[in-house]
Image 1 (tube, helix red, strand yellow):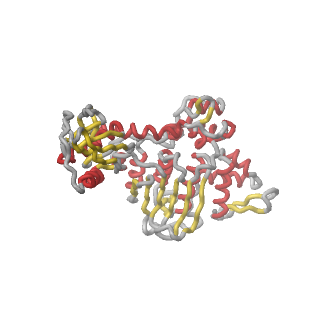
Image 2 (image 1 turned 90 degrees about the vertical axis):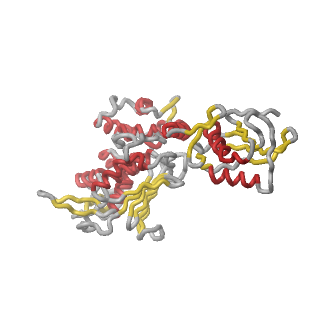
Image 3 (image 1 turned 30 degrees about the horizontal axis):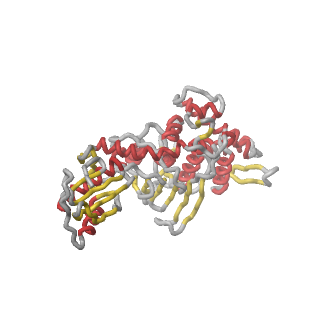
Length: 446
């Protein structure tokens, strides 16, 4: 048996070189995700053997476990080579980049070279490119499931903001131009963006205290991503405190948390979540904070602070979804979301925290202990643009149907139904008479 060092094979004279061996293992993993290492063999291939005591193999295993992150579980065995006892280590792992003693190395020929921050970023991008596979998969929906109204609404908004140079010329044509179709079939992002997709949902709840023991309200939102964004923002608006600031001519209702920051966090949670994971997004409103969570791992080797300080560009998990949101001006500039959230909160002295979790990412807005000049209960819940449209349409035509409301407000029927239920629950409107033949009534002072 002749052994020669290569990009996947490392030779060490003895376990006295354990530190160098650990560096070699991590560098081979970062380059090839698998490899072998022998103790008891010189780097020129000469077999010298390795003394093995009662704890030698265990000590090697512990050293690898203690000094390589993420953890790996190699095979470590005593082997006989040309009549001499050596130690063979076989290892593999896909969770790159691997760190040895807090640093990242990569294999170049038979040497281990430490990576610069920029090179580490390239390794991360290589790893993350496989996560884009979800966007390239075909949807189970037929193109007939696409809401023409939703597509037209997007086109109208994108043209107003001058982020597209084409108009509506048919659903299929628009989706092709947006890269949401391949071989005449819908891709999964099209399903989420423009179909009323009930398979994806956002769970929302209001809790009585600072934990999840007792809840005061619970809801869930479905629909396309644009509908879900509106419903989610409306829910938070309705359950945070509003204060009053008096100007020279009129009073202004001011939320305890900047609405721009809330919406930015919601958009971020929809663009960067991992849609291959069945778990939904979550909104949790506590007595002292508001949490917006999505199951999408934060890019390794990067931190929220890198983006807040403008040091890094966005690493997009779902570039097709992000591009559509950008064209609709829901994203102002890629990679600037966390900075915008931070700046909005800093301007009004609201504490915000960005938490990188093992299961995803969460933005936490901390509420003020006491709302300044709180508005009475009936008026502090400021209407969203969509709820205001519904109220105005009802005033004009109290007998208006849900379908007609959908047409007039350019919202999906499911979104209209959700807004109506919210307005009824908060006693802004009430239904008089049966569904057929009855009418809506706007409650005074609402």
